[in-house]
Length: 302
Ligand code: GAR
Image 1 (cartoon, protein in one colour):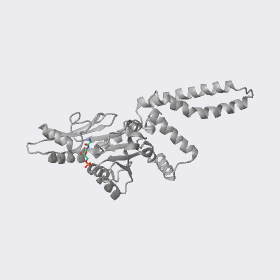
Image 2 (image 1 turned 180 degrees about the horizontal axis):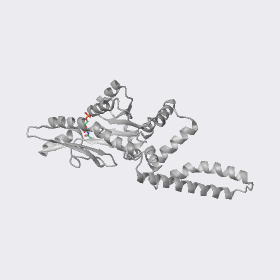
Image 3 (image 1 turned 30 degrees about the horizontal axis):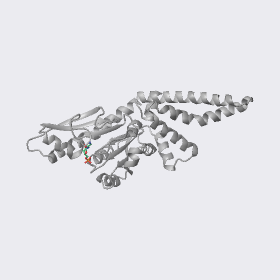
Image 4 (image 1 turned 45 degrees about the vertical axis):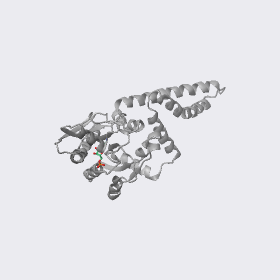
């Protein structure tokens, strides 16, 4: 049962525990407050008291869990959970959302991938190609932060929905968690995505976000280390080898657990441009397969 909940809410074991604690403490607080208010009222008829208690608890419950979710660090989860609940009650779900939710329940595999990319999208193209026709895994969305990025035309050509994101909402809003959940996204692949992933998104998709970095982490990683900046730094340092790192994404830049690394050698005649080509070859050869392996493991666990 716990594994099913982890899968459904896309959280690791520790977060599931914090969520369940929030439900339990929030629920108890709500019951306690309900009784406290009821005791202030001079109503003796037990039927009316019961009805009033149910009404009070229904009103108080969202406030109580949100309050408790702050110290347990699960505010973003409960904000999104309550929002969805509210939408269901108000019957505001769009037809598309209804359809997508039905699809997840019907399908044996819930893995719809969102590929986040900021540039040319050669990795995104390879990933799309690899998963074409593979049962159980599909590229459901291309997320991009640049209207002129090549990856958008690739998505259009392949008939994959796109989501163009804005800085303000990404970093100070809900980090598009609601949109991704409504699109039934279960897994996020960063493929040349150059913005840092906000905590809200990392938490909502904990253990379900992977990134590819064009160097051998922990070397040449961190803020400002992306694309050609990495290759320039590696060549300037006269390294004899470089490579790729595929890793889980956590709250820190290029920091999450490394899943896979591949190495290429650097010769004296290599330039940042020729190194970039070697790195791209490694990325295209390994990233799609590694993504599939990670997802297969997650599916087996559920
Ligand atoms: C890739 O080399 C990827 O490793 C890198 O951007 C390139 C995107 O190429 N990512 C980073 O530097 C992230 N720190 P693409 O748009 O052709 O896939």
